[in-house]
Length: 138
View 1 (cartoon, helix red, strand yellow):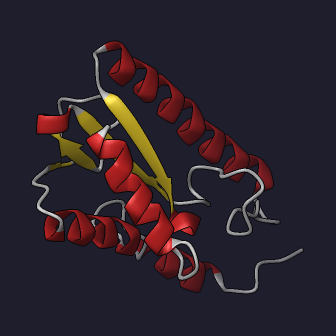
View 2 (cartoon, rainbow, N blue to C red):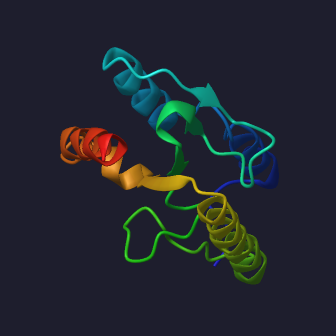
């Protein structure tokens, strides 16, 4: 099946996708800040460059996009019908890197929290953020 967009349109669309300061990430950061948490962002010295680092709580937060990190059984993760092999290789590489980074961080004594993009949608967001506060405060 052919792509519904031209090569130029698809290229432009993909170039607009951010790796930092995404809407889900900004939502979590604002929530944490409003609740008195102070944090660092994208610390280069830590494996996987966690999105949010809470040094005081020895806690790291990764906010994963469902598509980019291959969130199984999620309606936002659909393997593209074009260049399928290339996409699967890319997404599976992201998954492998996530697993390795998480293990390295746990081995260094960090608590790692992963939040999926779909958990920050309208019906889930409040429960997800309240649960996040509970996890951090443990």
